[in-house]
Image (cartoon, rainbow, N blue to C red; front, side, top):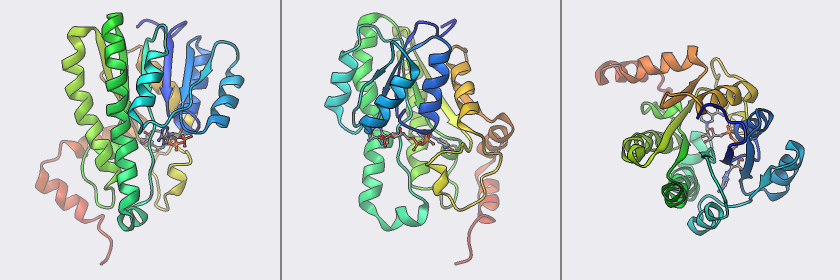
Amino acid sequence: MDSVKNKNIWIIGASSGIGEALARELAAQGAKITISARSEDKLKAIADSLGEGHTALPLDASNPDMLINAANSFKDLDTVIFLAAIYAPHSKETKDIDFIHKMLDVNIGGVFNTVNAVQPVFEKQGKGQIILCGSVAGYRGLPYGQPYCATKAAIHNYAESLKIELEPKNIDVKVISPGFVKTQLTDKNEFPMPMIIETDEAAKAIAKGITGNQFEIHFPKKFTYIMKLIKILPTPLFFALSRKMRKAQ
Ligand SMILES: NC(=O)c1ccc[n+]([C@@H]2O[C@H](COP(=O)([O-])OP(=O)(O)OC[C@H]3O[C@@H](n4cnc5c(N)ncnc54)[C@H](OP(=O)(O)O)[C@@H]3O)[C@@H](O)[C@H]2O)c1
């Protein structure tokens, strides 16, 4: 894709944070945006503020039928970007198995529901683009990162599988790996978040990545390259490093 101008782009998880900022950035670049999430009122207010030609399409990403109905409602769809996720800090997660199951349903289940819904649409069109959101937190199993980080690791794995599988069908697959971005999601964290950036910066990096040739869209680069270095450390060395992050028992 040379430019996003006049492209039909569907962002799932766009009622706040990175998704909302991305909707604003892509609309400013001339794309026709459809935004989804559960919060109908917020979505409508955002779609209205984007101006003419943009649509709010409320849904719950953990519901496969809602995704199928939504995907089939497009006359023409160029790109779907899946950003929906829920998160709770580790101490809360570990006490709440019901929340962990919800997180699996949204963070990973939502990805499978989305691909299941859009792949037939893209195959019929003979083209399309699927962009999933992982995280540098999914590169390796850091202490206190799980289970949210495990959901992100799964997305990286799945995106790699899909990339090669769907290439012959003219469907481009990419994965987004953000470092820390200031949103309601990271506002829950009580630990220091190095090199945290604002949503506008994240949105600009993603918008650039949509039209680029790279499989992975990662930012901010100074931070993600450090995480990439950690990713390729031999396991014993990685464990020696991550033991230093372990809190006193
Ligand atoms: N912020 C960071 O530092 C960071 C770092 C790495 C990766 N990420 C990833 O970036 C993505 C965006 O996160 P964010 O930081 O912008 O958080 P956010 O502001 O909380 O955005 C999450 C979005 O997902 C939507 N959502 C949640 N559950 C949903 C469901 N069942 N169905 C449909 N939509 C649902 C939320 O809207 P509703 O509540 O209205 O449904 C919201 O629009 C996530 O995938 C996150 O894992 C973020």
